[in-house]
Image 1 (cartoon, rainbow, N blue to C red):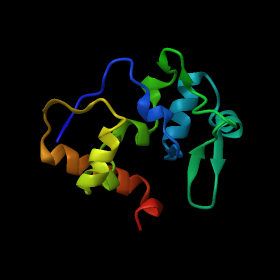
Image 2 (cartoon, helix red, strand yellow; image 1 turned 60 degrees about the horizontal axis):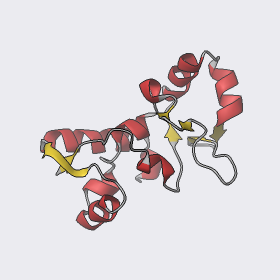
Image 3 (cartoon, rainbow, N blue to C red; image 1 turned 180 degrees about the horizontal axis):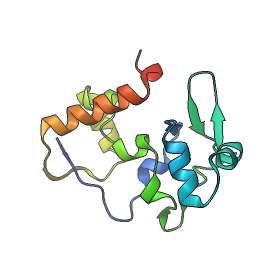
Image 4 (cartoon, helix red, strand yellow; image 1 turned 60 degrees about the vertical axis):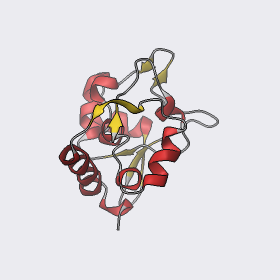
Length: 133
């Protein structure tokens, strides 16, 4: 597998779906934004019994997707950092190829070590077990 994020690309941020958050994501992003975790959560997080996710503005994408890219890139959520090494993509060649249709970084760069890919997919499963049960 090959993947190299392409400078200026925000294709992954423009896809439909949710950005799930770990408990650790919340204070990290809040601190980056100069907010308390409670204020950040009240403004940007939707919480269910088992999951937390970023609220998505109506008819829009992520609050933090700006003209120049991700406004919270240095503190971005785990899910965003791991993309495209999500289990559902790396464990299914067809899903990987389908994602490559809109992600210009797939197929670029040198071959990646399988240990890195497995570790990343396992991290996603570990952080979001409710999504992979």
